[in-house]
Amino acid sequence: MKNFKIKNISLAILLLGASFTIQSCTDDLKQEPITEITSASLYKNFDNYKNILAKLYGGLAVGGQSSGDGNGDVAGIDGGFSNYMRLLFTLNEITTDEAVIGWNDGTLHEFHKMTWTPANEFNNAMYYRLYTEIAYCNEFIKNTSDAMLSSNGITGTNADEAKAMRAEARFLRAQAYFHLLDMYGNVPFVDETTFGTVPKQINRAELFTYVENELIAAETDLKAPKTNEYGRLDKAAAWTLLARLYLNAQVYTGTQRNSDVITYCDKVIAAGYSLNTKYENLFLTDNNVNNPENIFSVVYDGLHTQTNGGTTYLVHAAIGGSMDPKDFGVNGGWGGLRTTKAFVNKFESSDLRGRFYKDGQTLEINDLGNFNDGYAFIKYKNISSTGADGSHENWVDTDLPVYRLADVYLMYAEAVVRGGGGNMSTALGYVNAIRTRANASSISTLSLDFILDERSRELSWEMTRRSDLIRFGKFTTSAYLWPWKGNVKDGTAVGEYRNLFPIPNNDLAVNPNLKQNPGY
Image (cartoon, rainbow, N blue to C red; front, side, top):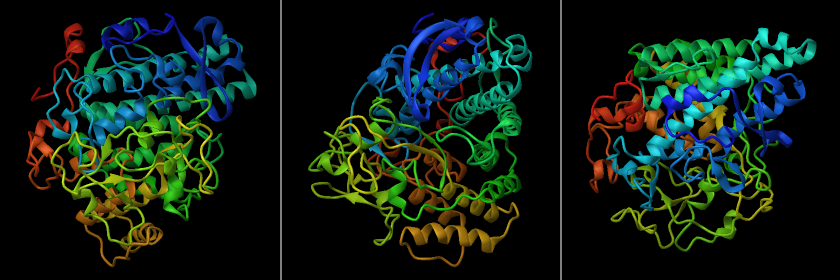
C-alpha cells in the first residue's frame, strides 16, 4: 500500500498494518521519505527501528510523504492544511479569542464563527490525521511486543532500546487519543489487537481511563527526564500529559482529579527543569539549545523538514499588511492570522508576552477577511536568539513547544486553587516566576479567573486555549464573549454541544457502530 491515503477511518483500520511507507531519520529525528517494506522483514533488523520510529514522530511534524507536504497522508485536502500541528491550531486557537484568520479556503472561516458542521473538511482532516497517527503507532507496537522481539532475534541492549521505543509509540498513540478525547469525545477505538474488525465506539469516560493507563504504562519504560535524544519523549513528557489529562478530568468524566494534577506536576518540577530566562527565546530557531524549560517539542528544520504546517505556518500566516517578512526571517507573509481585542486587553503595557503589530492595523475587527482588521500577534520567528536567519527563507527552523515547564507551573497553581491540595504559597511563587520573566507585575493572591487569563498570556497560540475555556465554562456560554464568537461582531453564546466537534459524516456512513455527537 505505497503512499496509502486515508479516506475514512473505519475502512482504513481494516487495511493498515501489513505494510506502510516509512521515513528515514536524520539528525534529531528530522524526517525524509524513503521506501515501502513489509513489516515481516523490516522488524528483523534492529537498525531499522529508529527509522520506523521517526515516521511516528514525523506524523506530528509533516503532512505528506515528500518535501512541502507532497503526496499527503490524508486524502481530500492539501498536505499542508492536513498537518497535525496546524490542524490542532485551527481547532483549538482559531475557535477562540486568541486568533482569527482572514482566509476563506473551503470551510476554514467556520471555526472562529463557531458554525462548523460534520461536513467541514478541516475538522474531518483533524480526525483522520489522529487516526493515521494511531494506525502507524499500532503497527509499531504490534511488531515490538516482547514476543515479536524474541521471534525476530532482537535481544540484549537492542531489546531494551526497542522497549523504550515501544513506550514512545504508546505515548504518541495515547497523545492522539487524548486529542480525540478532548475534541471529539466518543470515538471509534482501535489498538494493535483489533486489525480486521469494524471499530466499536468507546465513550468518553472509558477513553479517559484508557489514555490514563497507557501513559502510566508507557512511563515505566520511557527514559528518564532529559536523557533521551532531543525531540524524543521521556518520562517527564508522560507526567506532563497526565497532569493535563487530570486537569480536564471534570470535563471528560464528571469527576475532578486535581490532587493527581499536583502529583504529576511535582514529578516534572522535581526533575530539574527551569524557566528559560527570556520568553521570546522559546519561539526562535535555536530553541532546541540552552532551553531548560523544554519538555517536548516537535522538531523542525528548514532544510530537512519542509512543511506548510507547524512553525512555517505560524510564522508566515501571522505576517501581513505593512509587516516586513525579513523581521521574521522569511521571504513573505501569508496575511492570515491576527488576534482579537479581548486577547489584546489581557496584557499590561510592560508585559513582554503581549507583542502586537499595530501599524496599519485596527483593534476592532469589522471584516474577518481583512488582515488589517485586528492587531497582528508576534510570537514565532525564523530567527535565532543572536539575530541570525534560519537555514531557509521559506521553511522555518523553529521547533514547536508542546510541553514546557511554564504550563506545568500554571497547572499546579490551578489545581491548588481548585482544592486539589499542594501549597498556595508555592503556587503563587510559580505564577510570579512566570510573570517576573515577562516583566509583568507580581501578584499577592490567586483566583481561577486570573489563572485562566494568565494561561492565555503565557501559552497563547500553543493549542491549549479551547480546552482551557471549556474547563472554565466560557467557550460556548455568554460568560465570556469575544469578537465574532457565534458569528456576531461583538460575540454571542452558541450551543453547548460545540464543546465537542462532530464525527465526520463519511465515517458514520461506513461504520454502523458509531453515533454522532449531540447537536450535529
